[in-house]
Image (cartoon, rainbow, N blue to C red; front, side, top):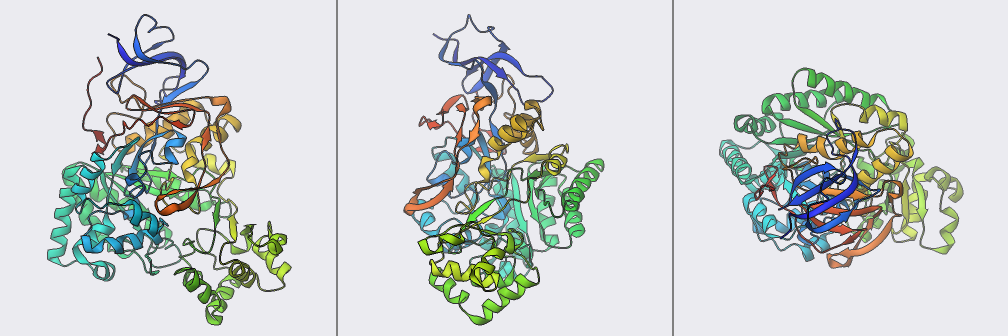
Length: 579
């Protein structure tokens, strides 16, 4: 009989606490938990069913990603790629107030239409991949619990489906709930938290230029326009329970008013508020500096506010057949709603085209992409258009001898909207990024995993941080990086059993080759239900990934193990003490 299930021997252990310097040591695992940690050779007299030789490799806690949209994908992909390819072992779903529970059976199609637009998940994929064996949020968690998982999952209670379930779509968007509706929503929130929801989430982007994630018809989502008082009613539930945290995406009002709302929410809930998101804008560095000042002042007041930072380049490749992140600009939104024939028809409409030209000329740029003039033609379909590849939209206008906005739309129309455009990153200047990540209350994240998969790949952020910011730039130590990637989000989420390598904690572990860790080139794969495609970026250098003590990936190849757990209230239901 062996002493342990697994021993990882001889690796450079970075335990995630950041207080203990890295050391060469051994880790023993039993029943999914870390049983012993010793200096190298300390377990030489002990036996295990499996021994992993980690000589020359880094051994660290698996990464925790608190901002994903895998609500649909977990129904067909137990490993939640791309996250699992980059060392992530625990994720939170139900972010931004978006999700699929609760949902009346007759509302399922409508909910999928919303998610097709707001998170750019193909409708055909959802129809083919979702079995809808739930209606309420507790039933949703039970459904997750039953399913095979190669990664740990916890879920916020998303407010959009909750409001729609009680009020209906149009009422939820247009008015406050009446007394009966409010009572029912609060009851359902209590029920959802009792079942294991880790808190609630909402996106509040209003109806202006920052409203970039809209419903399928271009209108705001219910939480975008919900009243402050309704938000506070939900927040007071968390305060009374002394449980849960809040994920908030807020850009509804003037900047100061938005930040003030975050403080009021933290006060009303007495809970952690996870503000999404802070990132560098090279043109306007004062924006992130105001956020950093705000979070520091909130902490001085004793408020539990955290910020998630986008720390990987915000480059995007997109085609106008499905892109929705122009939605904050009315003129661009009008021509990018509908199927391909509908979009082309709108793009050819003289009045709509004039509105696009007007906004281009007056600098009313879509919020996410930055100036349209700086977007690049990445690749073309027709050989005769190859001469335009690599040009910015401003240069394209000169080359085609027409207004730049006309040039962009005409080129896309000539290729049935299959022209690929590229947004040049504007969030990755090293000195400005350092300002964000040196703040005590910020953490990397916001992968948006499972969403926008035809535009972006932020799920690479852990590898990007270790490869570029730590190894190549030397901006951070390994100790600091692993604290930010695992322990800090675990603390923010209220995890009590994972996030660091310590005896008694879950054996969520990554073992990687520090010198050879890298992000692989972007590729297109057709691996979604309905034969839909997505962009992916895999990684090289992760030798082993362990979830709850079982190896799920070896050198990037999935083992087929499914040890992931549903983390109700941020904790696995079954945790056997290591002996």
